[in-house]
Image 1: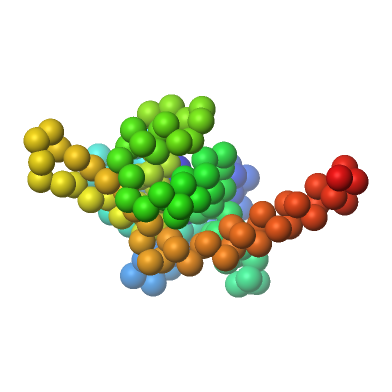
Image 2 (image 1 turned 135 degrees about the horizontal axis):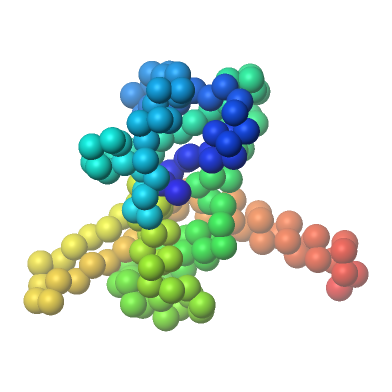
Length: 168
């Protein structure tokens, strides 16, 4: 999904509020009915794409740290996002096909979706070059580079976890 969108909370029927990037809190009963999920992301009833991610919070949870952790997992969760961020961090500005060749097993449709999600969350910058044919390059933003330490810590934890579980 686009940005931060917690589907499970909507299905569970818990009270949900939307925090729109301008900082307003909007009751989601009406808002959720207006949002239509498409394969390209979240659109409103008029079919217009959202330009900014929608952040949904559970109003029953008051713990800001838990909400921040959920937001982080929503942005970085999934099979491909960490691999994409690591690839762009090591490779610099790369074209679409270069990224697809480096990351084994990702299809073009999934790569396009994941790059678009990362771009929405201001982690990846998409640059269109004025050449014939048109060249598009993707690179990490300064905000995206802040994830390098987090990913390194995840790698260190993963190594210690393997030792703990497998004894290797």
